[in-house]
Length: 281
Ligand code: G3P
Ligand code: CA
Image 1 (tube, rainbow, N blue to C red):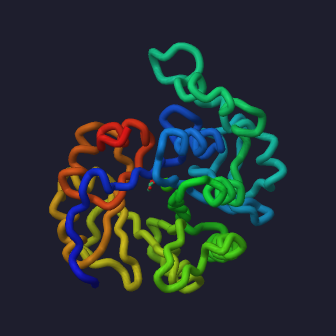
Image 2: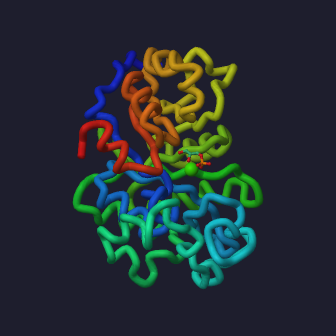
């Protein structure tokens, strides 16, 4: 553990766009991430999976069925096959809205050819490093299944190509790796010891209920549902020098709870709404 951390002031809480600005724009597409940056998000969150031919792509589910016009398990499809699919048309405008989502009206370029095709992690990294301001990228490895260990190896190798895997002492990579799997986090730590890692939590783990975390991990990623019932958990984590990145915070009352508790990052499908609530619009 490290020195205790104070609760963070509202104006200093980074807002991380969950799957991009995914309330308005189809999740995990270039359009969703560009939209999030246009809205002023401080960072982006994405889930990564390996294709059959070992490309890392940004897809949440094991299958492409929900978020594209195709069918099948991501890990059994090749990138060229995924590139044929449309990852945009499944998403309908929010109920009550007429025509395309507000984001598209404001930024018609989001509709351009290619902005709703499968997004490779490589392309997302380009977006991050080419952006004029510093953008954080929180990459989530999904539960290791078919390609146990390979996801982490390919991920660190790709980050290395961008010079992002091994920040030197005193430097901070804009990238951090998150997982619900302690094993996946451990693998990342072994391959890239100076990269920040986040242990995602969907309940307060018995073993770590005092606010401690596995060795080398300094950030906890609790779901907002945990903080609704265990708000004291934030102070416990802070008291041991650990930071708290909370997902997925979309409702006004939840944003207010995060502010009250002084969390260290808010991950939201609605970055614009969170920024406004934090007084940063
Ligand atoms: O940011 C963490 C959060 O994304 C975890 O849940 O299912 O949306 O990936 P999920
Ligand atoms: Ca995720």
